[in-house]
Length: 248
Image 1: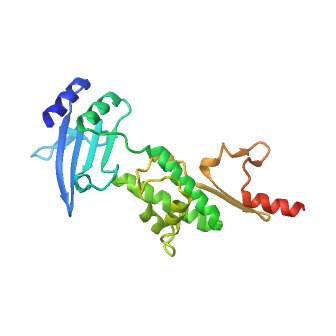
Image 2: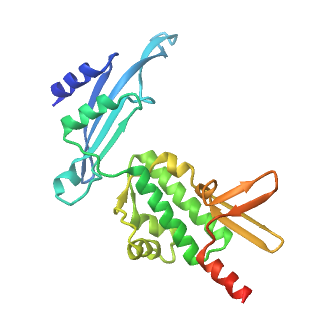
Image 3: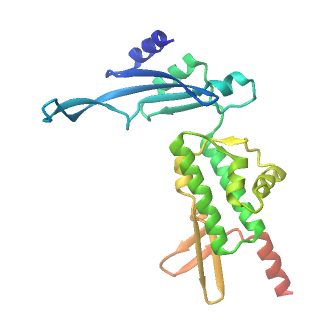
């Protein structure tokens, strides 16, 4: 396997690097790690404690990396989440070659799945009719959890997220997703860009309270700074019904 990977890498790389393969055992879980790492110039200390030039592994900019959960793969449980793949923007051809060598196929569209999850969360917050503080707290919980899973290189699980979103009703958000049939997988790889854009704007003044997700700004909600007004293009159904009754 290493020789075949080396041939694929040599055919695609313009610069050299180190192919690192590691087999790890953590508890009952076996994991295979693979990474292509380059060198960079740095500073080290010799035996006389003098600063000298030294080559260092540049782990902050990986050209290619993969992590395979061998235990999950061999268990036979239906899942598309046992492989995590990292590639830089300029290495698509290389990444495609390695993916083909490993027999990998794209299983989940992370940005699309993350957007669907956030839509489900927004619907849940609206359905529960939460106040501004509770809504903001739950949004922060979701974002913090997603960022933590990104840092760990692991997917978000719907059941775990549901327990974090509402500790008093740990199954409430999970049941909301399942009952509404959003088509989400039990495990979702968080998309960093989509998560970073997801925050809630809230405000209260003169008897008016407004709260909405930041990703709606520029689509269903517009802010006209020159005239100091907020334009809502898609009025919530519940609000429309109240306004209609008021008009009658």
